[in-house]
Length: 143
Image (cartoon, rainbow, N blue to C red; front, side, top):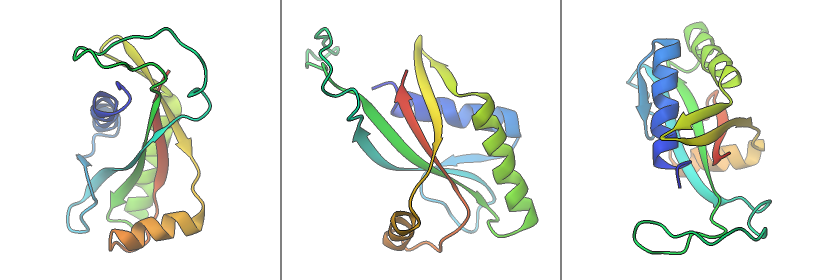
């Protein structure tokens, strides 16, 4: 489960350090300038779900065999539709491309820029009552 909370925290720390911008976790706020990392979905990686792996237990004794979470986030910048906003988003993209693997407490988290269909992106923004804006779709998963 490193790819979830710890991976998200590590991603934000890297973005903060490399871009020197304010980085926030959560639903983006139009009034707050900076980089907003909005976690919107936790999914199972269907490509590895069916592989047999040794059974391991978490600290609470629960079986985590086959667990392969993928945390999907959108990275948005504010102000969104300005040259400054586009420059910020490009800076974030460069950092993500340069750091595809994060070391988090001895575990590795793969950071991948992914694509989203426009209709899925539009539905997500509509459901959150946000105006559609420039963003990067990113996935975090254990490596």
